[in-house]
Image 1 (cartoon, rainbow, N blue to C red):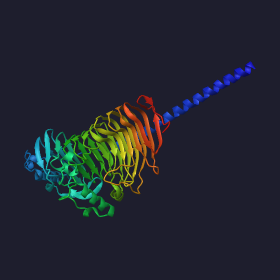
Image 2: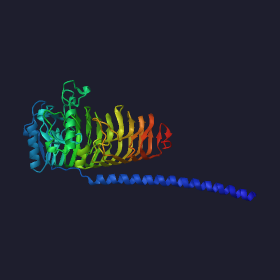
Image 3: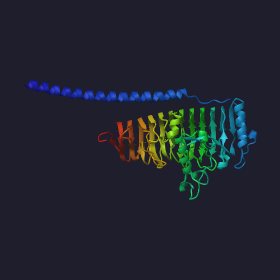
Image 4: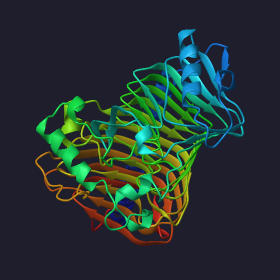
Length: 481
């Protein structure tokens, strides 16, 4: 009997040991799979980067001074800059030089193989008079139209750049463009014009399928122009410039491929002053930039509602590296204009920190937008302070009235890895999915979030995972969610 009890005791211990070993193996396998999966993900990003080439320009320089330009805040240098650009492009390309000084100008239209280069100490001072802005094929909040030209504009060009340590100044303020948003904080007063009526007209035109060439706005309308827009361009470089006082969205690659935004410093706090909005664009690398904005720092777009579905070009392979985000509604966001879909977004080695930064990572859509957001990967991020949430995913984003429709959005595959947050705001994760379209596959791996009011507010999320993630000092898990 004693031998039986001894054997029974040893057998039980052996079974317990085996069970522990199996559990440990499961954990090791799961961790190995997780590491393998993320390794594959980031190798895909590296492959995209290797496929991208920085535009190169012939060693020819065309100084605008040689075309009659004068350093002045009132002298109109538009024709001098235009002639320099045309000669540069006609002769095979090169650099159009803006020397040290201040140069007033109306909108600038770039040509292929031209690098518009601003010397350190150079400033382009743009007109704020709407009558100086010709109509061009452009877009407003994800809907194409004929509207005021962007301040710097390139349409269907190849190998084109804006570079240098100088400054582009849109001169927007409460006294001109900004008041059109219709908010008193930006100078609007009762009886002054505002954009809302024109937005509604444009939305209606898009829903009715009216051709873009017949969606005419501009003079006597109040849709503000984008600052720098590359429309249907290939091989684009925006490097080192300082940007201030934008009328509307700041940098807007639209239907463009192979776009590099490097070392740009944006400081513009007007309404809808998104820092960089890649839209319908592919292979975009935003790196080494600083964002201090009146709206989202980086907002990835893909068209709005019927117009987004008409164009049908998704934004994909958007890579954000080594950037600093301060004031703004969101650090890196997708939407809400994303009806054509967004795939493969990579964010790494960034710093976000401001009491005026609402959300670090934000994905927003609704059932009028529809569309698919998939494969949003974040790693190695330091967040000092956010106001509302570290991660916010919202399928009920509401703006411009009723946003309910029959185009059910999908959101899936979101990963945050190696993220540290000192002040997490109201929520670590705020995720609002739909019963008929749940948010799928959110993973937090090696994430540390401190000083957050409420760890989670989650509805209709499928497959939420925490791996070595601590919130307010406690190991996070999905128990009770």
